[in-house]
Image (cartoon, helix red, strand yellow):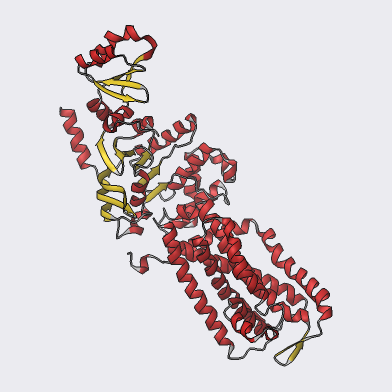
Length: 315
Length: 262
């Protein structure tokens, strides 16, 4: 209880980098983002989690000033982000979803030219670019053209480019989509280091493990709205519990036992998922009878999403 | 709506510099076309077609055919360089490379990006015109020092053709469709703007129609400067070009904002 209280106080006291209130985005009458509110604090990684089309990208685009806000209030670094666009953008680093590195330039030049957009002087740009290439372990590729780099290298270079202006807030839109597992881990490592440096990170993803690994706090979004907000581990614990039981073909008998143990049931794609405080006991009772078709596993964010929406997150 | 000063600052130069950085890495190759093309034209039209053409009267002097078309070559160089840069090349940067999207995540705004792109098209028109001028001057086809005034005209014409190109780019759903505006706009201008033959040979209605073409006015100005035959009425041509450039520049900004900012 004491620890929880202290945690809350720290949370409330950390400087708010982004504070969105009633943020809404309408495209021709369609509400892509519908009245959402959240706060991103200094030194934390805040995640927007949700399936494709949930409104994650639209939300971050409003935050980094690419898309005009339809309605709502957006305060970034204590400034009104809708009025002081340039000052705000000057201190944000953005890693967009698609690879938009400049294929006409080398890796090093990509960073230097980008620094110019922030009005950085030549010496500073060069120094920063070299440091960042070192940070992402691509010094040896400084003079390589972009098409010569692998997907993972390009992604790391995109992150380095987002850091050229030494931003206070880094926004990453699905930073690991389409990467192989090694590159994904390397990206996570970079982001963890940045978090350690006290930068704020705003991240969108549709990968559960990614959100669980990186995010201190997150919201789950669907249909432009926030379904729930919290710390990943606590969300799982509070909504699902520690474990879930997954059964491939649940017989009526199993369903009856589950009901007796007052376990919740969710059916998805031919599988039945049971959760609740007594799910271990349920497994103990029915486990021996269904052999391979049953598995007791740790609960994940995906289960949280499934319970909240009744459908699978990845689609 | 953001107030205008916030939508256009000198930061656009940063985008121009990006294009310059790319340009200088491929320099020798980029010089080939503006140097070799006028030589081909001079050989084909001067030695080939020119032998069938006596001479062409122009403001009190008789010009050989090749002398007559030399200013036309400069004028079409201005048009092609600016127009193609702000159509195909800008479209590739916008649509395939997503370079504009990346820029818009920095303090740059769309108006600055587009201004820089048009300024870049005009820069290429300027550089190419200077090279073509050097080549045709080597054949003794331009009169100096008044021909130096062609350079600022190349910049103004470059903005005019670049701004039209950029407006078209803002409307193009895909890169193949550029063939249509090229056929409707560039080809007729290329042929009927007084570049390769005097407009007086055309019916009166066609002469009047040709005056709508910006290339007609560029040709009028460049020929007068190249032969040192400037007359005050030509300020109308300069004015027409300036208004044309301003109109399409503003149109390009509006259309590009509508296309890219969502």
